[in-house]
Structure formats: structure tokens, C-alpha cells
Image (cartoon, rainbow, N blue to C red; front, side, top):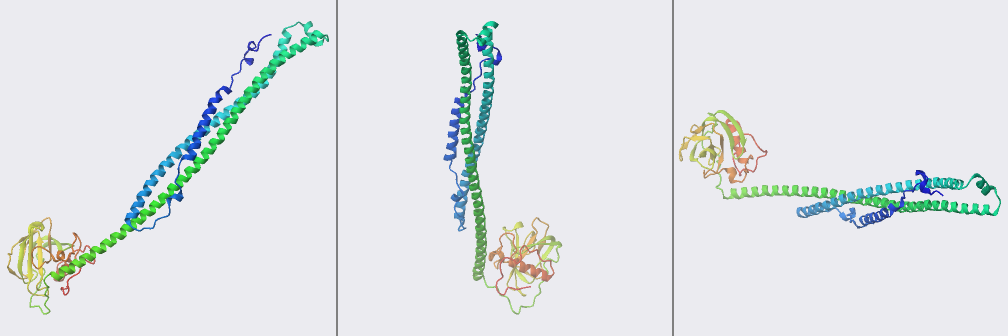
Length: 427
């Protein structure tokens, strides 16, 4: 009787599908365990752990809270990144399990088709084998005869052929059962993988929500901190102004009293800049700044106290005390780019040329000086000048020059910084 292996490709040995699945099943169990560990062991900060918003109390506490929030946000960012990576891996594993499940289902369909085909083929083999082993008369005798020998032979043949068919069918059924078992394992693995993906998605959403909450809290803390710093800056500015005022009052208490005569002796004041060509007014600060070139005169009758001082640009600081008029006893200065032509102790009038203004890099500055004539201005004495601002003494001298016909200076701030002593002359 020919064997099944000699009947051609259709009845050749079948490729088994199941032996590859034990390794896949072990891999599935490991991956599912790993995903379970990720889903249960990752510690996520939640919005509740962020705590209530702290009201602003001090710069130090807000700065400490800001540093803590920045540290926690960095940790939460790392957790979110880790969850995103785990989520991607879980999705990849889920796709792999789905592919394996699809392959198992495909092989199950193939096994069922093969079983049906194998059954039909085995039946044809049985018929072929039976017919090739006897002539026509014997065959007819076997199937048509009613003697005992024919019946026994027919039963024996039927048993042999039936056994082979059953063996083949059993083999197909065993393969089908193994494939179905693999399908069940993969279906369970797929369900666990889907559950892990869903849990990781929820945890990632919770972590992102906590991160967003802390970012909002950080923005609030930073806003509170900016408000506190602005308030502190305003308090500091107010304290500095109060300190300047206190210094001015203290300076006024120790400075020699300024004598302003109610009925001054006869005398006239004149524009000291009437001879300067291309005269151009600049800023009001300790005094009044000008540019141009030409002779500078005294405002009125007086006595020269100084002509130079190395602390001023150009080294010139001409100061003189007025001896009559509304400002009798006050000291006027003209400094910087001037060549002096007077000397200390010289008596001057409104017609006396003090020096020649030249077109230097600094121009000139003129205003009210300290009574000592030592190069310090009244604005500096009273703590009014901070580097570029308009002072009360500078603005007052600008008013005097404007009253005498000179162009006034340019104010940098209005009102000017500081106040004048009592009974100071106004113009």
C-alpha cells in the first residue's frame, strides 16, 4: 500500500505552527508583568499634593516657594517623560501581541481548511489503495459477494483505512487545539496590554495635570514676588526721599543763615551771559548748563572767593559773594570751560568780565555755590543732586537768568528735586 509521503505535494508532511508559541507565550508573560510593575510602581504627584496657593507674605518666603516649585516641576517633567516612554513601549507591545494574535487566527483558519482537505484526500487514498490491490473480479467479489471471507477482508480493509484517516484527523485536531490555546493566551495578553496602556494613559494625564497646576502656581508666586519687589522699591524710594529731606533739614540747621535784606542797598543785576555768542541752553542740574563762546560777566556787585578747583571739568570754578540786591550775601559760581580773568578778593560789578567762555567739551555751568566758595554747590550741600536731575537750587538760578534776559535751562524733572531754604529769593 503506497504511503502518504509518495502521493505528491498535496499530501506531504504539514508545517506545524504551535511549536513556536511556547517562547512567545513566555515573552508575553514577562512583558505583561513588566507593564504591571510600571503601572503600579510609578509614583505620580497629583494636583492635590501641590497644596493651596500661598498668599504673598515676604520676598524670602516667595523666593523659597518659587525654588521648591521649580524643583518639583523639573521632577514632574521627568516623570511625564518616563510615562510617555512607557506608554509608547506599551503601545508597541500591544501592536506586537495583536500581530501575533492575528497570525494565530490565520493559522487556525488554515488548519481548519487543511483538516477539510486532508479528510477528502485520505478518503481518495483509501479508495486508490483498495482499487490498486486487486483485479476487477476480486473487487467485485469483495463488494458484491456475500461469503464470509469477503466480508472479513472488507472489514479488515475498512478498519486499516479508517484508522489512518482517524490518525490524520486527530493530528489536525491536535494542531487546531494547540493553535486555539495559543490564541487564548494571546487574547489574554492583548487584554492585559490594553489595560496597561489605558492605565498608563490615565497616569500620564494625571501627571500632566499636576505639572500644569504647579506651573500655574509658580506663575502666581512669581507675580506675587514681582508685586512685593515693586512695593519694596517704592518703600525704598520713599525712604530715600525722606532721608534726603532730613539731610537737607540738617544741612540747613548747620549752614550759616542766609541774610536776605528786606530793603537792599541800591544795586542792579544784569544778564551775565549777554556777551556769549551762539549761546545755547542745556540741562538744569546743580545749576544751569550752557554752550557757546564769549565773555562772562558778574550778575551784580560782589567779591571774588575762588577761581579754580580741580574737581570740576576744565579746573575752573569762579565764585563770588553778592554784596547788594535781592540776593545780597548769596554766592554765585561759573565753572568748567572758562579762562578766568579775575583774582581772589577782587571787587566786581555787573560790568566786570569774570572770564572767557571757550568752545570746550563740557560747556559751562553757573548757579548757587556754598558760602565758603570751596567748589561745592548749594544743591550738593542739601543732598538734592544725584547725577543728572534738576534740583531746586538749579531751577531757582535758571529763573534768575530768565528774569535777566538769558534763555532758561532745560528741566530734567518737574517739580525739581528738593526745596529751598526759607526766605530764599524768588524771581
